[in-house]
Length: 492
Image 1 (cartoon, helix red, strand yellow):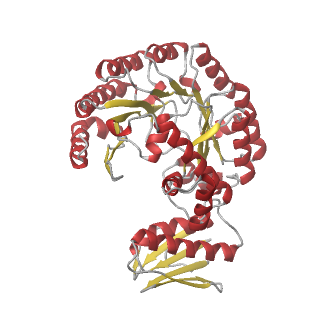
Image 2 (spheres, helix red, strand yellow; image 1 turned 135 degrees about the vertical axis):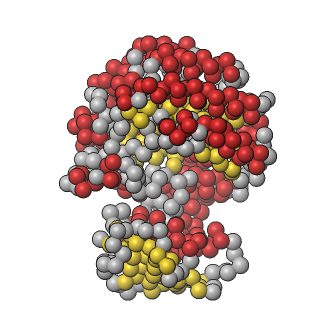
Image 3 (cartoon, one colour; image 1 turned 90 degrees about the vertical axis):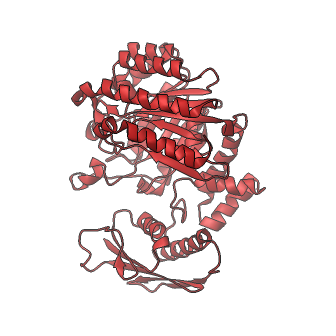
C-alpha cells in the first residue's frame, strides 16, 4: 500500500507521519508539506497512492480528510495556545478519524514519542492518584486503559526508587564498547565484528581513557550515581583488556558511593569464567545475559552464532561466580516467531530465574539489515499481539517481578513497547535515569551521547560520532563537544 500525506504545516508533520505509520506499518508513505515535498519517504512520488490523508490547519480550525473515503473531520482550537497543545489536539483528531475509518485502535493511542511514562509523571505530579492519572492519559491521548495503568504504575514506582538518590548533586556514567562477536540482523547500534578489528581494540581503549579523563575532570566533586558499560557487547573484548579498563575506572573515578555498576555481557558466546572473575573483582553489581530468543532456528536466522544451550551455560557460570543481579533480554516480534515460539522462550527464562527481565518489541529501523533486505524475509511473519505481550507480563509476575521502566521506539511490531521487569530492589537505576532524563549522564565512546539535565528540565546534548575510525581520529573533538555542552548547560 502507498499512502500520501498532504499537510500544510512543517511543525506538525513529524508526529503526524509517525502516527499514520503506526496504523499502516507496512505501507510506503510519501509526505508533502505545503507546496513542497517533505523528507523523501518513498522512491516514486509520482505513482497514484492507494490512500491520501489531507491535513489542513486553518486559523482556529483543524481539518482532516481521507481519500478514497468519506471522512471529513474538523475541530476548533485556540490559535494562541502553545504549540504542544495544538499538536496534541491535531494528533487526537487524526487518530480518532483513522480509528473510526479502520475500526481499529492502537495500544498507545495517538502517542508517537518514546517516553510515555514522562507524561504519566507529569499528571501524577499535578496531584492525581494512579487511577485518576491513568484515566487522564486515556482521555487526553486515547491510550488504552491497560497501557495507561502500566505507565502510571511505573511512574509511581520510579518515584520511590529515585527518592533517596541526590540526583541534582550527581551524575551517571555511560561507556560504549562498540564490538560484538557478530552483527545481528536487527542491530543498528554501530557495532563492529570484533574478529575483524582486533587490532583496533587497544587503540580504542586508549582513546576511551583519554575521554574518560576529561569527563573526570569535568565532573569535579559531583557524586557518581551509576556506571553502565554497554555496546555492542562489552565482554567481546579480551578479559585482560576488560581488566585494564575496569582498573582504570576504579583508579580514576570515586566509586565508593556509586549505587550501581552494570556491564552488559549480552552475548553468551563472550562469557567465560575468566571474564566473570574480572567483572567480579572490580565490583560489577549487575550484568545482562541476553538470549533474545531461546529458539535455535531464530538464533541462526538473526545471526547470533551461539546455541540456546550456550545461554543456559553462561547463566549458571555467572551464578556460580556470585552474581546476584542478572538481567535477561528477549525480543518479541522476531521473524517467524509467534505465540508458540515466544512461550518456549518464556518457559526457558522462567527456569533460569533471572533477577531482571526486559521485553523488547522488535523495531525495524531503516538501517538494520533485517529492514534493508526485508524482501528476503517477506515470507516470514513479524508478529506481536496483546496476547504475546500479556504472556510476557505473566511470566515476569511468576518470577516475582514488577515493571519498573518502559520506553517505545518507532516502527515497533504491533505498536507496543519495551518493558523492564525486576525483582524488588533489583531495578536498574541507570535505565530509569536515562529513560526519564532525571539526571545528567556523561557518556564516553563512539556513538555515546551525553545529556546535561538542567534544573528546569531542559536538556543539552553532546553526541559522539558513531564510526569507530572517526572516533579514533577525532577524540579531541568529541571531548571539546562535551565541554561546550557542559558550559552551555551551566551545570559544570
